[in-house]
Amino acid sequence: MTDLAEPERAVARPSLGELFISFVHVAISGFGGALPWARRMIVERKRWMTAEEFNEDFALSQFLPGPNVVNFSVVFGARIAGAAGAAVAFLGLMGPPMVIVTIIAVLYANYGDLEVLSRILSGVASAAAGLIIAMTIKMAKPLFMQVGWPAAIAILAFITVALLRWPLLPVIAVLAPLAFALAWIFPAGSVKR
Image 1: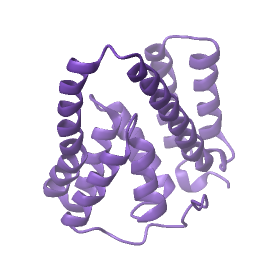
Image 2: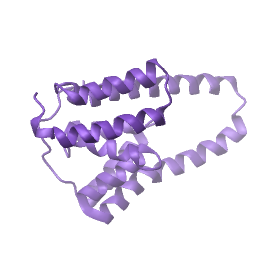
Image 3: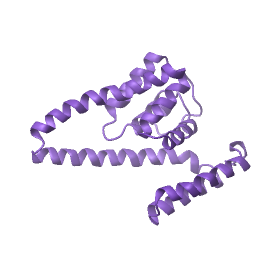
Image 4: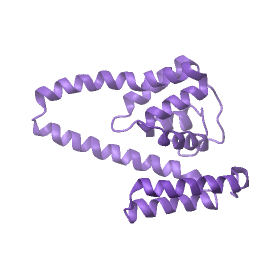
């Protein structure tokens, strides 16, 4: 059973080899989405980052072009060991899926019309959705432990995009500058917990 308690603070820095092996493990475990596995490995198991540090680096990764978890691996690797760390984390994350997807593509080309395969893929998609929901809840927990504007911005974003179905880009165009302004006026240390 996994311990759901968040660690108080980051405790270690990995070597390049450990960084590579850990991201290989994330890549192999992360069918349908590697981000929940990356968070579990980095925050909960290895304690290389706190939940807050993970959320900050992941937020940066979302603003960069490309897949979020790939961006995160580069940002995290660079934080640990500069360009070498970024390259090692990226290769560990992307290498195994490239090999696996190539093999699956060949198999799918030959056996893709089987109905049993369609049912299997539906089950995998459901499991991936559950992992993403669980990870979102874990990532939101530190944010909602704070009283004040960070939680209000998150709730406002959820309401406008998920419930009102407003387009994402205009919502970000309004809320991102607002969040930057509030962070400037009320730095992180001044938010009450």
